[in-house]
Image 1: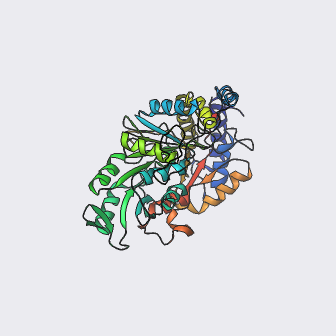
Image 2 (image 1 turned 120 degrees about the vertical axis):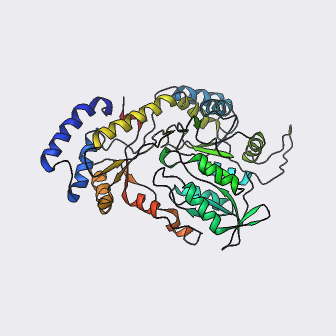
Image 3 (image 1 turned 60 degrees about the vertical axis):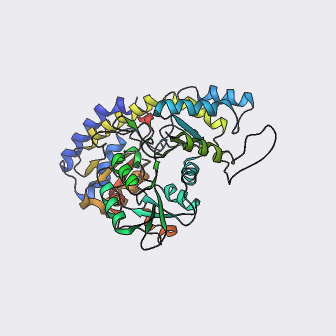
Length: 414
C-alpha cells in the first residue's frame, strides 16, 4: 500500500482539480458520496486495508519468541511488570495495573471505587457500549447524559445543571430524586482520542462527591494541557485491543495516582488471593483480570514505538485536513485548544443539511473497499438501556447522524 505521505501531494492535487472542474467546490447533495469516496481513494486505501490496522515494526516477534521459549505465557511472567513500568513512564502515572481487556478494567475500577448493585453511574450517551456494559457488570445502572459539541465528551456545565436538578443529598450521598437510587460515580470517555473537559468534569465530581473513572480507552498519547489522559480522575482505563493506537492483541490497563486504590486494583484483579507460600485464601470476591505475559510481551514492543505512531497519526490528520477541507460537504474533527489528541480515529462530520447522505457515503465507500464506519448509536437508544435514566441527548444524536470515521491506521503515512 503506498504511504499517504508520498502520494498525497500529487494525487490530491489532481483529484481536487478534476472535482472542482466537474461540480465546483461546493458539492451537490447527490454527489456527496462520490466526492468523499474519490478523495479517500486518492490515499491508496482499498480492500487490503482495515479501519485501524496495527503496525508491527519493532521487536514484537523477538519478545513473543522470548515469552514462548520461557514458558511464561499466562498471567505470571516478567513482561507484565515490564509493560506496566513502561506504560507508567509514558503516561506519567505512579501506579499501573495491566488487565485482560478494557471492559474488564472499567468493571474493576468501578468495583474498587465502591460502586455496588443498585447504584447509578453517570456515563455519556455517545460512547462505545463497553462503558455502559462495565456499569451493568458491576450490578449498577448507567445514567446517560449528553456530550459537548466542542469536545465530544461529557459537557461539564450541562452535567452540573442536570445533577443539581435530578439529585438530592442524603448525608454524604447523592441520590436520584426520581429513581431513589444512589448516584455513586461518573465515567466520561475521551471520544476517539479527543480529551474531554477534564478540569470541568473533575470539579463536578468533587462538588457532588462522586468517584471519577476516566474511560481513556481510545486516548493513549492524548493530553489535556501537560497532563496525560487518565490521570485526572481516581482511576483511568486504557484499551489495547487490536484496533487501538498500540495493541496487546487484547488487553487493558488501569492507571492511578493513589497507592491505596492501586493496591486494591491489583488485589482484585488477581482473584483477591491473599499472599501465601502455598495456601489458597481469598478475602473478597475477586476477578481473573490480570493481563497474560504473552500479551504484555507484544505490548512492550508496541510501547517502544508509541511516540512515532502518535506522530504518524497526527501527520495523517493534517493530510486528511489538506485533502478534504475544500470539498464543502463537512469538516474534519480536530483537537480543541489546550489539548493534544492522539487522533486514534479520524472523523469527518457532514454538514447538517447533508445528514441524510451519511448512509449513502458509508455504502459507497464500503462498496469500493474503503473501510469506514459511523459513530456508535447513542447508548440510551439501545435495547438493554432504554429504561435507564437519561437526559435528552440531541448532540449525541446529531453527531451520530453525520459522522464518518475514516481509515486511520498509522500505516497510511510514512
